[in-house]
Image (cartoon, rainbow, N blue to C red):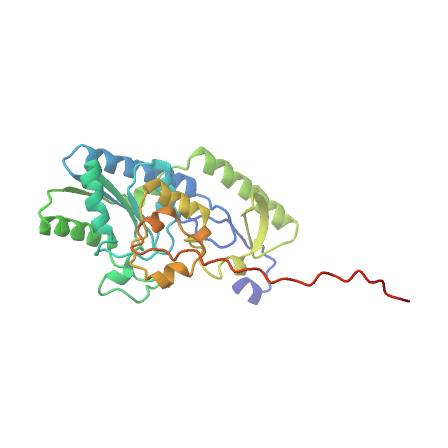
Amino acid sequence: MECRNRKLLIVIVGIPKTIDNDILLIDKTFGFDTAIEEAQRAINAAYVEASSAYNGVGIVKLMGRQSGFIAMYATLASGQVDAVLIPEVPFEMDGKNGVLQFMKRRLQKNGNCVVVVAEGAGQSLLEGTGGFDASGNPILGDFGKWFYTQVKSHFKEIDLQADVKYIDPTYMIRARPCNSSDHIYCSVLGQNAVHGAFAGYTNFTVGLVNNHYCLLPIPEAIKQTQSVDPNSNMWHRCVMSTGQPDFVSSPPETIRSYPLSQRRASSLLQMQYQLPSSPTPTKPATTKAPSTERSSF
């Protein structure tokens, strides 16, 4: 805006650099692959701690204030996670379909349990949250520590011995040199940014869209943040790898309102009711055979 007011001939180009991968329209942002690689190390450490103790529980809090891409992709990359909680998918802590009951079953079955949580998950369960900081970002409660406290208290109440460990890598997943994939990606983004600038474009960003490098208007790319779609194939792949159900007590009416193709097998297994039997097929209406009489012209 200042350049426009001064009538300066300056080109404005943005490079989509954020580890959260939450920029609209763009397939992948620079830094995301490196963050996943480092986050996976934290998950592996939690698994080693959990599997080395009697009824060991490893809890890992990863970055992701409004989107759970890091938690989702790091869970897929590790293959050692029992449950993942992200801001886009609601969940309940207590009850037969709650997270705590699921963790108890995993401990009884496997002897250990690893849970990954995004920092923006479960904010509705915390007290004293709300408002925005000076940068316009929502003020979040520390869900990771709250979740850790709830898990320890629950297992103590039900008299189940559990060794709970909490890992919060914070800025370690982004304060490191980029890997080779991000290095190449950023180089290509920079080259396309220069090409766009020399072509006379301004106020744009560069990014992958359907595996094609495109120039995108910055106002369109920042209209809102990109988030994980709970009905997407990638989220379904993630929860199928963990084996977790939907941590909500949905009434039958709500579940039936979705087509079968949008439900996971784990969700169907937790239903506590019988699906209605198939209706008796009705006899199709008979149609009158077309007349064989020829029309006279």
